[in-house]
Image (cartoon, rainbow, N blue to C red; front, side):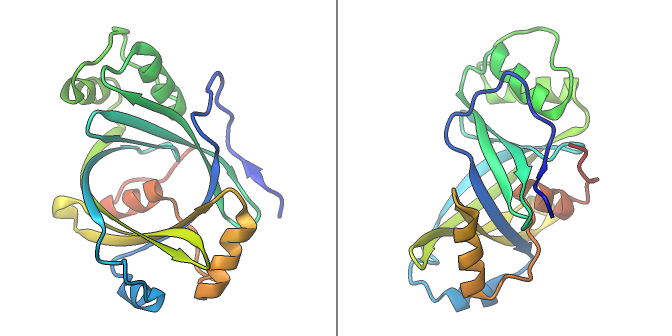
Length: 211
């Protein structure tokens, strides 16, 4: 199977190197956690985040305190791994160029005012007014980092208020063959890859992606 590229985004510059990613999500991954047998698990940190879930987009945007980040799903490889390009990392105030880049990734027209946003609340209000198909989802996110054969992985727990709690395990690397090696070591080769944003959509019962 040949690699499948998503629609390219014009005039967007990466802020760091793209990385291949494989992820699995489930209500309970405690059996995988026990199999990892990593003493550092259980010592992770919790963060409060707002993920901007666009019903018709595969790209991933979120807010952590006063920082807005956007990852562009650049390519899906023949093995199902996804190449994610972090094309935006902005801190308050979010300028018109930042907002335009975000809405361009979603394939939507942005707010007409062209103003800068000096507070997260005002920014979220503007997103909601301009894009009813974008849902701001407040989550608590716990990251527990570990190594498998020297390769960095992350075991994550996500709570979404009334929508419940789910877990995720993710491997990221510049070389997809390294990810394939780790999956083989853990016996996860047959398990499907799902992105964080798509897993969140499934947990929330939202529609699928368009681009």
